[in-house]
Length: 437
Image (tube, rainbow, N blue to C red; front, side, top):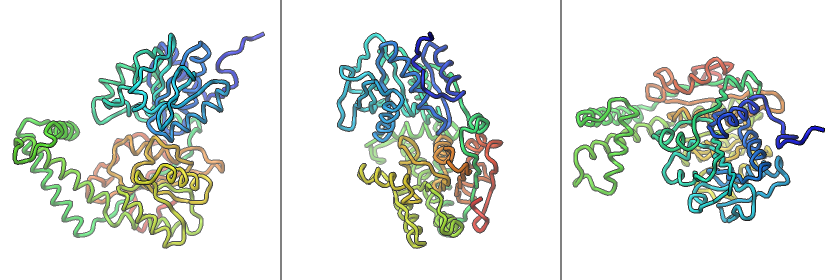
C-alpha cells in the first residue's frame, strides 16, 4: 500500500509542479516569478504542506491585511488540519500556538519568531521586501525560503543587496506567453489611446520640460550620471540626504536635485491628470451602453477617481471609488459589492495595484499611464483570470500625446515587450475610434 504524501489531494498545474521541483532541487530556496492569476499561492501551499509534514513551522509574510485574510482562507481550505494564526492588524498569534503564522512585515520585524529546527518563510509580493524596514522581517532562522512575485524588480538596489542574498536566485519564471499557451489566463487585447492636451496643459508641460532640462544639465555638470534612471536615483539620494535643510542653506547640487525632481513630478502630473482622459471614460460608457462589464479604473489621484464615479452616475450607472482615505471596512464592503455584481465598476488611484484581493474583472482602464513596467503588469493581471463564460479581457491605457506617456514616442515599451505576441491585439487608438472589442 502506497504511503500518503504531503501533496495528496492538492491539485497542481503543470507549471506549479515544475516550479515546486525546481525549488526543492535548489535546497528549498529561491524566487518564483509568475504572472498575476497563475496560482502562486497554490505553489506556496504545496511548500507549506511539505514543511508541516516534516514537523516544521511556516511564516507567511504578506504586505496587507487584505492579503492576510486571503491567505487565511487558502490555508484553511487546502491544509484544513493545521493550526493557523495571524500576526498584525490586532492579531498576536505566535509559533507557540500555531504551525502556520500569516504576518505583516512590520509586525514580524519586531519579534524574534523562532520556528524551531525546521522553518519555511514565504514572502508574498516579494519585491516589496527589499526596503530596509521590511527587510527586517526576513528572519535568518528559516532555512527554507520561498519568494513569490509577478515582477521581481525594484527601483533601488533592494533585489541585489537584500532579496537575492536572502532567497537566492530566480529558480522559475512563468511568463505571459507560458500562461497563455497553457490557457491559464484569459485571452486579452490592449488599446493604447492617445489623448490631446489642452492649450494650457501643453504650455505647462512645455514649461516643466524646460525646467527638467535645465536642472538635468546642471546636475550632469556636477558629475551626476546621464542615464535617466541613474540620474533620478542619484538626485533622489542627494535630496534625501539633505532633507530638512532649506535651499538657502543647501549647496547647489541639492538645490538642483530638488528642482529636477520637482519639475519631473509636476510634468508627469500634467500628463497623468489631463482633462481628455475623462473623455476616454465617457466614450467607454457610451460604448458599453446598458451592458456594463466588471471594470477597474486606475487613476492618478483621488479627485480623478471621484470624477470618474460622477461620470458613471450621470450616465445612470453605479461606481465606487476605493482609496487609502477610506476605512478598511468600507473598502471591503465596496469590493464585496463589486465581487457580487451589485456595482459594476470600481475606481482607484493606486490601492488596487497589488496587495489586495480584487474580484475578477474583464476590463481595465488606466488613466495614470506613466508608470513602471511592474505596475502595468500588475494592472493587466487584474483582468486575466479565466472567465466562467470563456470571454476575453481588455486593457485600455490612456496616454497624453506628445508627452512621455505617448506610445508613439516609446511609452510602455518595456511593458509591451512582455505581451507582444501574447495579446490577441495591441492597437494604437485615438478618441473617436472604437475602444472596446
